[in-house]
Length: 100
Image: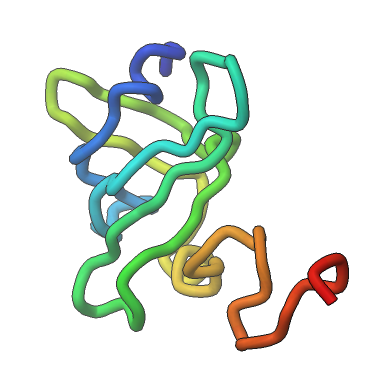
């Protein structure tokens, strides 16, 4: 079972989806004053196109601090389909509407 401090201090943990290794935690992203991160940035294994995937912390099934391992409740294919960045700003060169 996961605990809040396990997610907050998970930098560098290996990440698995089912039995497949998908990468390691690059950084947890906190939305405010909570001790739990809202998102986790996963540095993906070479077999997954791109470098990172952004994962909602709500899909974490288990954290094993002793083994530095996190298991996600997603399949390998679902991880591949996740975005590579948070949708904070357009990443296609366009300006945000409020900046125009």
